[in-house]
Length: 265
Image (cartoon, rainbow, N blue to C red; front, top):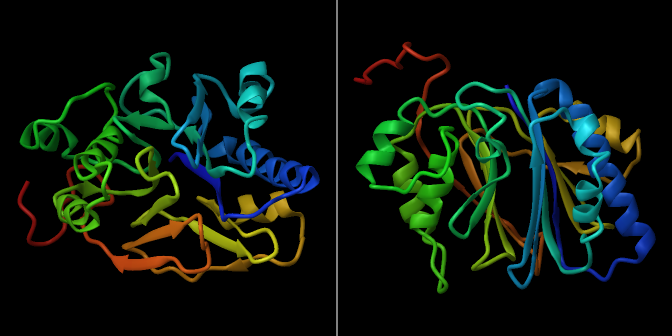
């Protein structure tokens, strides 16, 4: 059980006070998310020019946010930031002492976070002949995305087709340095809540609605996005209100060794 929190930013000229407010909301979400993942924590942000900052350590969120390097990343949030990703990891496969196993994960030009487990990741790494940087199964999702990413466009149809072969659980958020204005959200069979503010031109996301509730402290103006499971969303920094939404499929499996009806391992 890992935790994801973050902010997807629409294009807007925000004053310093508004940027500080959104940073504080993110910080609160990340700290409250610690109970979902005590073994490692991390943050990443992406700018419109493809530049990025990434910081992760094998510690609880309360310790990570006190690190000056974390503060340095947060200081880079500005009016050119397209997404701010946070993750708290519950270790399953791959030691957290090897920070390659912690999130956010960079795979080529893709940066992302994932909650869940892909049970057949090893087989799919071999099938697609993908490079492997870490031990964790989560890396597979971002390597697959990188296969269908280019400087010209991101091949959503090809990515969705490849995801159909994955077996396990997932919800994930990812973006490409080739097209940092487009943020992809996979709401699979793991929980993910999204809320949009027209005033702030921003989308908050979190693995539990309570993580957002606690961060906003009853502040009004954020509305839930009613997104069904097994949905791929594509948010555009230039016009955040007009997101693309389409279904995607994979082999949903809640526990290792227990296959859905009709599925052969």
